[in-house]
Image 1 (tube, rainbow, N blue to C red):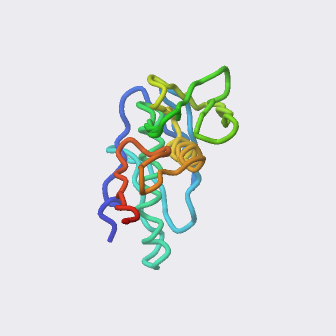
Image 2: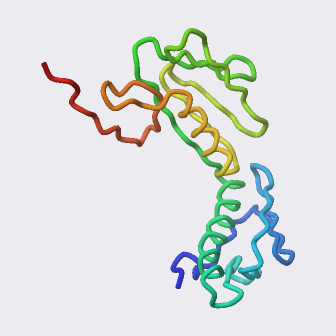
Length: 177
């Protein structure tokens, strides 16, 4: 039994939710998002919010139950508050800056890396070694953060590279003489 799936998704004031069969459309102050659930779960609108229940007791239905409820909860959170990921850059000469519609990164390569900022995503660099990614879609924000981190992942010997702000890099000792 999914503990996450049992709880209904509460709908805050100022948010409009439309449930039509397997699809959910959420509209709020920050924008609007939609999600189509699989046939393994049933979506319904109740007095206390959106309920997600498994269609039957199969393994697939119980596996999709909690995930579908979390996706619907992320829609509601996205249109009210939004999602944010923070990245840190470590290394001598490594820095980032937003130039127009591109994120320009100096990561120790022979050239600067230009990452185009997609529509609906806001990227800021409060410091040259810090990147803040903001958007209303949790999956898209996480994907962009992962793509930027992949340009120069942190290495274990000196810790140089792009890492999540809450990530801890396990350091290795290195070669001994």
